[in-house]
Image 1 (cartoon, rainbow, N blue to C red):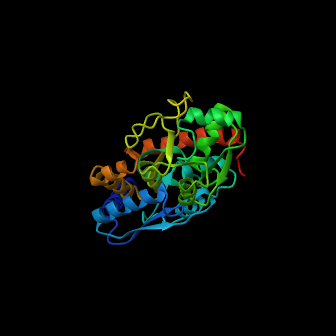
Image 2: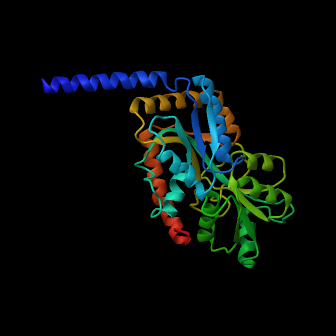
Length: 323
């Protein structure tokens, strides 16, 4: 009799969970937290996802910027949010791989265990740029100049320890060059100084404003960090093609939430994410330089775990651990 009662209770719970998922979000607003300032690739992607999901659900999907602590403020808020599926975070290589690699001993949450990974959006490279006035046209010329003039070249990024910054730390490690990092408070001001000529070189996430700046000729792209060229910049070589064999840094975006969100809700998030990413949103993302790469939640979680291991090594070698 106890077994029968247990089966009945489990069945009722599953039925209730399915009903909740079918109705989700049920007219309630959903928040997407962004751990960075407006105007960068993470923010742009979050707003595009919010619009598409809001149209699908007929509900408000609000983007809430909570910049600071290398994305940790928004990530921690999501980890500690009610497990109901109404708080999501635009998780990315910075928030869920590099920040855990840098601050593993300080985090108040488990970047894997406290999260569910229902929607992988896609991959995006960083791009290394110079002002057009600089008489350097290729990455190899830049590397050669930096070797002849150690410490003379500066490069700007969205901040210490973010993916763009560490992608150049990896370049420095692999080539032996000495160039000086100038951190900014976000991707937008870093790009603005590169376009104005106040900064000789700059690195940023290709999605969003950098792509437009390159196409308009306001900056010159020397290379993309991914293993393959970007479809949006087919004439710009990869770092590996431009003289750094084996180099590969590909960022990624997804929507993550609290790990204790009911499984039926997580399943609906995954299904609805797949639906909007297969529609007109796909081209809009690709026009921003993002290659849509869907995955199962299990595949996405496994990828995040492997990325933490990869960047932990880079952080240690660049002496950025816990700074």
